[in-house]
Image (cartoon, rainbow, N blue to C red; front, side, top):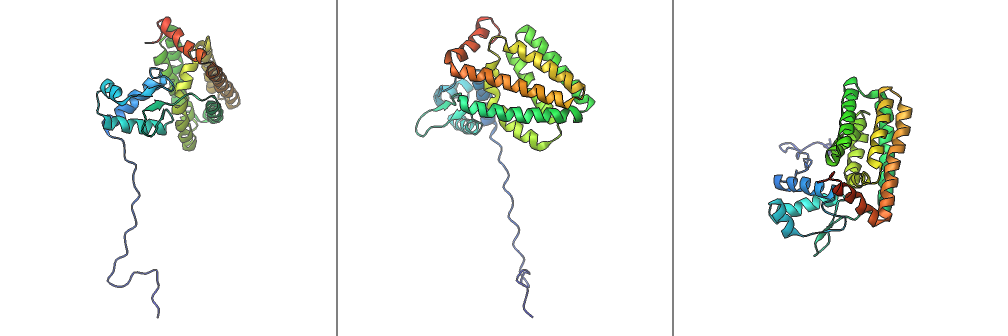
Length: 254
C-alpha cells in the first residue's frame, strides 16, 4: 500500500513549524530619544522642515549617534521625520492636503467611536471622562497649554477606547500621533483653545446622557473645526508662527 505523502517516514520526525518573529522593542536609549524628540516636534521646539543635525541632538539628549539614528527611523515611521539619503534628516513639513485627509479620517473614527462609547462606556469610564473635563477647564483658565494638551489627548483616547472596539482603537492610535502636532498648533489660533474646551463640555453632556447620535454629531463638528483652523494656518506660514508666538508672549508656553 502506498504511503501517505502527508505522513512522516518511519524513524523521521516532522520539521517543527517556523516560529513567528516577534517585534523587537527599541533599545532604552532610543526609546527615550523618541519620546523627547516627539515632544520637541509636537510642541514646536523643532519647527516643521527644520534640519536635524545629529551631533547637536546627540549632545542635547546626552546619547550617542547610534540610538539617535534609531530614534529618527522610528519617528519617520510615525510621519514626524523625513529621512534623506546622505543628508540630515528634517522635521516633516506640515502638508495641508495630507492633514485634510488625516482630519477627515480622524473625524470618521472618533465620531463613530463616540456614538458607540455613549452606549458602551461604564459608569467608571464616564466619571473618569468628567474628571478629565474638569481638569482641562482648570488648565485652560491657568494658561497651562502643554498640560492641557496632554489631558486632551487622554480624553480622545478614552472616548475611542470606550467604544470597546479594538479595531477602532488600533486605527485611532495610528492617526493620533501623526495629528498631535497639528492639533497642538491649532490651539494657538485666536479663541480656539477656549472654543475647544466648550466643545468638549457639550460632548461630555451627550455622553453622560447616553445620546450617541448627538455625541457623534458633536465630534464631527469638533474635529472638523480643528481641521479648518490647521488648514488656514498651513495656508499662511505667518499664521502658524503667530499661533505659537501668542502663547510665548503671554507667558503661557515655556
